[in-house]
Length: 421
Image (cartoon, rainbow, N blue to C red):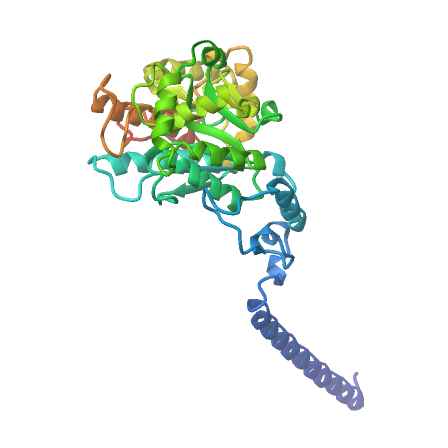
């Protein structure tokens, strides 16, 4: 039996401990309140919930870098021009070590459209679907995307607008090794494939074309400037300045139109344009040494060649899936790249079976509704809808659905287990 004195001692001890805990709790609450207020006014000091590797990426350093230079300009033709960019990027990466891992293969995609609404009744709808396609591809591969619909240089209209957007993206994203420009009228039609970046380690720019055709015939159509990879480097900044100097903001614009029309006899209009300017720099200037002309896969393919083959491509891929159980397994979208490697094994040595990587609707202008006179406007829009539904089926597969009719993407059906066994 417990004595009254022992009970009294226990009661006093309990009261003392309770007071201590109440005092300690009040101190913790007060500390957390002060910490919250203080950290909100000190953005460079991470709060306890921000100390993980991922969250550190959201906070800048107090160390000075190129962003603190008052003469820095994101605009083309700025004075003074950016110099020492390679060193400045490396210094920035040292100040932000959480970005160092994976930096050599990090990509930011840049695309965009005109500032105002489309003239074509379905133009904005098509642009939205084309943008969704790029977002799906980027999400699947962990690529950041910048969609620009502002003229960053008011005189650089139409196809010349890309040079200003790409330059601004380079300075805004020093953590990215590659800037990937993709025209608004280009669509990814193989959602698994990634460009083989190690192949381009000695080059600063990658374009699609036919190098032998360029050298032999000096043709205006040997390269298309609608899709390209540009290394985030001093070389690229200098190249963009020279390339843009052929554009409409330059006093030499008319002169360059005459020069390019003289060099490329098959050029169909007299004005200087980005495509013939790029080919000229590749053939006639030092820049060609660092430009890789890719012709081993559809880095960007001509839609009129690709779209009629989509049904056959679908049938070939379906047949491979029937024979390879691993490809039929349901899985989370986040682990899709592992299944893409299985596809690579199945497609090795069968390059003719592969889905076209990028389908470019050259000659179609979805926003204005204008198009090359070789084909009708309906053929352009119908082909876009079909190609985009083909790509969307690759995305929806991870969500358990598919479009049964590529001509009518409004309809989807659920996929049975172990499809298409």
